Length: 188
Length: 250
Image (cartoon, rainbow over all chains, first blue to last red; front, side):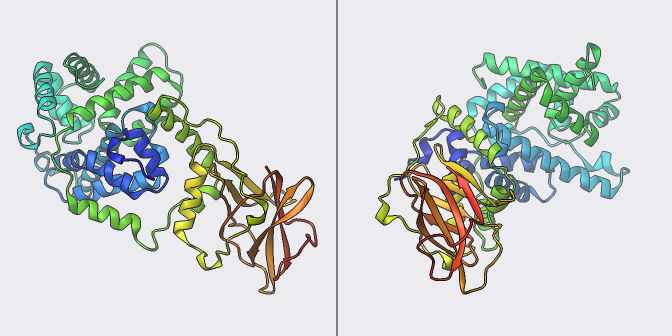
């Protein structure tokens, strides 16, 4: 007697994963694997390793489902957070190895081509609009930090802005995005 | 680190940068320490991470070949589940608490908060499946851990008179019981461990565990107040011949 996994919420799905149900992990992968893989590819920007990142995120969920804490956010955001961190770690490790000299040229900012990688058209357009409304300053620091994997210090150096300004722009930009998206009915 | 006024605003900015992984290793540690003790920053971090997840939503299909690699990695022989480690290391506590939270989030109520112990199997059928052949059987281990995590399960430690934990007992909500005996010293082949239930002060044999117990499934005796393990001759004994080497109160 097995419940239909596709009807389960994410939190219940993780409970099933904790009981070693591979089909539950497969369902989680079906729901979120595409986003996880796409984010890894985007941050890695042409470097190999997106498959490894996606694999490690889901095997971590399998080995340590208890690390996902439902009261601290959605499963999707948890998985994307893990994937992002791992991808950023790969980028930084590689750059440390290659030396700092080449880095400015090595890390081109990936174009923000939402249209080509659309998971949900409605959400995509809301996100694009919200980003557009941010204003150049906030949008730029968020894109460089999140999609290109720079630290806020590196972003500050790249843009010739004070570190404190970059940091507070990240916070205010994220807060504004969040409010915009909530107004549009996306997110909470 | 005390954070007041402007310092705390710095920390809030850092929390936002952390949500985008835009901090160095030392700052990462500092933020992680801080959010453990600051509910406001923790809530803010959750919000930032959810927002970042929306930015990252683009995706399309999950690639099938990546799933094949994941399935290979988790199902591969030799890729042992961390179950024994987790049970032995006592990490079950956190996991069970977490499961209760997850179940609550999933159903809107703490699921099956208390289920009565499933000690309903008749005395006659009480027995231990001889699973010596299944030594190292990962499927069984997973089953045992799965039963331990299910709401209503009871998880006990088998401890020696000196207080050492020699194994874990899972009394499943559905009536089955498991012994995960990872700390018992091996016996000579003409000896065996034997599992007993204490019912009304009397020992009732639940069966033999073999000289090198690993993971065993058994059917608990109704009314048992204690479980005990003794070392006996290989055929087993009608009554315990000596003091238990390990026991657990139910």
